Image (cartoon, rainbow, N blue to C red):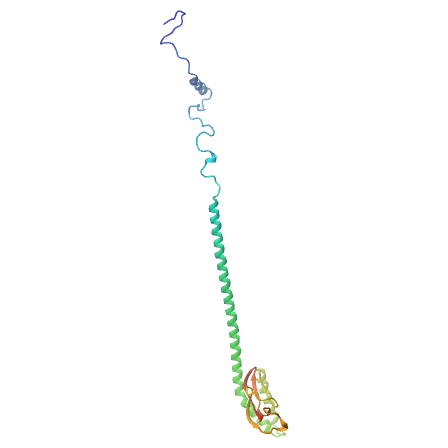
Length: 221
């Protein structure tokens, strides 16, 4: 249909060009390898999804776990210190027991040695007494006198090397723990006081503080 001014109108009139479609067409023509704004373009920064500050895991260690680990380490240290103290006390008790055992064994060994020496001395004392009687009864010009004296000296020296010594308490006060009274004199010579040893029948023998045989004496009454 034609207007009076010659303009064609009606159904065949063309529509105005779509500016958005034209823009997309131009973009495809200029950049064929890039997707257009309507086809899978990358979202703008900050659009969609949670931000960095909204992340569930920030990467920092939990303080509660660190406190539990520290508490566990302290408990382990306390247990280790307790075991150390227990082992130290056990070692000290063991050392003390061993020291007591060593001292006891040393005392028992010394006592056994003394008993052995005392037993041997008791067997030899009668022989010494007989030698003393022989020396007292022998004549001064007896040729055997010097030999008997030498044997008596050797036996006495052997006892001394074993720690056994003789004692003669003449003139001392009578002591029942050291002396054995064989007789008493009512009128002792030289006016000795009562209880004084005025004569020694047999000398006594001792090993340290142990009396092997008391001295046999005569006491002033």
